Image (tube, rainbow, N blue to C red; front, side, top):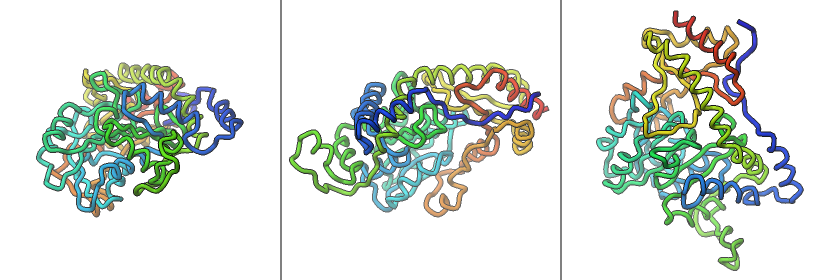
Length: 379
């Protein structure tokens, strides 16, 4: 095998990013909510059919906005998986809430909707499904549970841009949704995110919270003669240069997705034999889900030592990585949250999962090397 190093991720640029950034600069509009931000908002609203889309400086910021919009109070409980990024929990812990972790499904690694009902208490305020790897949670069941108990649903769709559930865009199904445009995602702006408001009753407050608690957006639309402090908020909007970069990506979002899907499908085909041999399990995508090829992961059979497999990748110049340390096992998770049930699947998945390199431009030769090294490691 050659000595070429294969990165885990390589941020992709369409070629228009710097041109649009220069255009924003020449237009003397560098603060947030300029022309490029508005283009991004319109694109997101059209693509997802949400009531309102608002760019944020990160997906973390979008999630923090959801906690403010839902008026989360100290002692409230929010149901979510433990197998997720810290921002999912932090957004609510910042308001004094208690994350309640439930186990995940063995197939999609998403929250197990069958366990949610039993985790609900009189203090429960919201359910936060996380669409792992851009594959949708079982949203019909989750929405039915939420409506039956009078709960709100916040979709953490950080990995879900361009994915759908039964034809509906991820992030557009719950009351609120959050996207990430971090450089590790499919469509990027370095840092960056978006809040999707699907409940029209929350749209105006979302604008106010995003603009430091003021009705500044209404002032610029001519709806009020001056803008004033209306409620608690913060500066959640990104600068126009970030939006200009993002616009170049959104213009090519479909092409980016198709190229990633081609690489994902090739991994899936070439790894079928290893799955048949019992060494690993490939990702599962339910038929009602259309995913975006955000990542390709494998689950090692329990008898294999993941660290030895990762070392085999490293020694061959391949950057393959594990993923989350479950939040329930972290110091902060034990301090601020609680678990419902034993989270057996979460613990097992976290110890066996490996993410393989996947990015636009990854060649077939590089993919073949990744698969060959994995094959040898399992032998």
